[in-house]
Image (cartoon, rainbow, N blue to C red):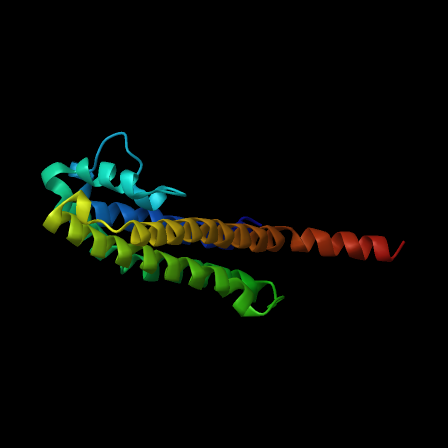
Length: 188
């Protein structure tokens, strides 16, 4: 019986480990964790931000802003890590359940999350180059709005990926009980 819980646990754990572990490694490799502004939520974790928020956040790095730039460059690879982990977990759960829905339904939020993350990172990278070269006045408000929207889409899609995975794993955990219950009810 315990082995039946191992697969669901592994399916839930894989994207969590890939996400937190990958984020931690990127912060470590870039040096970002040493220079990030204390008390300010990172832009990639905010549901919304504007030009003033970006200026305040990047100013908080002081001379350590190149570490944030390196972090953003490393973050271009990160969607492949967590996206691959989510895709693998979702497809393994889907397979274990007998392929109950078309796979594109499961993979659409993963692809949307990855695309919006890349959009967020590419726009922020272009803007951080402007900021480093010419200061806060060189930032482009419209581009910052695009990055903010991409971040919101990424975060919402990421929640969608996790909710889909929890539902599939939940069904996987209770399906034997449900089938026994239905068999019991059908023969009465």
